[in-house]
Image (cartoon, rainbow, N blue to C red; front, top):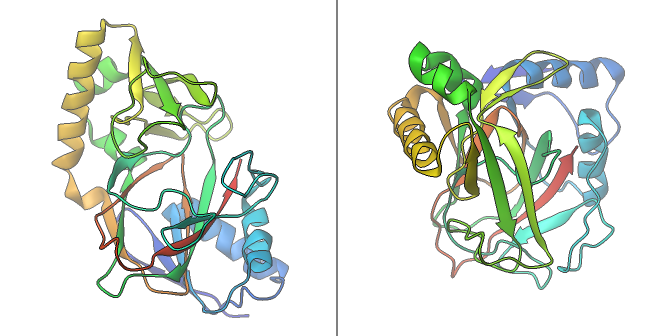
Length: 268
């Protein structure tokens, strides 16, 4: 099997061609995909007709799968649907700014996979940002300030998922966890800047006011570094696999009156 790896941008992503995800991958093909993932942080593979079982099999290349514990009908399942057109769909509409999935857990997701089933004819885009590259581009003094701070992340599953979380609106299904601004993988020593405005509610190492000012300064710096971004224009049959620990992602606005359904699996 001859695999072609085509970079999508300078800092984020590669398209993989020459693989058939509808059947188990040979060892050399699986190894090539894993190697490309390590180098490019995000992979895009375009193949129509992939089943839930196909996606789960591919997902296992990247670790143990997250089993859902949710009210949306996906309890106990490894796949669920981001959809405005299914009764079991979650996160149906709305723009969502840059974030890493599940930073409000002690062990955030390592890898996320989305497979496009229905995409609005008017278009739907997701923006990805390389936060390892962002960290490397920070001025030394700003990086040192970030390295001295930890953030508390909070998410209430019973509240609005598109806006900034309010920690006073607690519920039994709310989650909280502390993480450093500058994350380090203890195994590989890889680092990334973890800054998420919608879930950050507290700080250690600085006052709350100083933490908020630092978060906004880091956010502005990232917005002024467009070269570390990749914007994906979804098509039906697209599978996107990305490193949730090194990439932040944002859902851009789309026409919610048109169907949009993506199937999601995650490795932990």
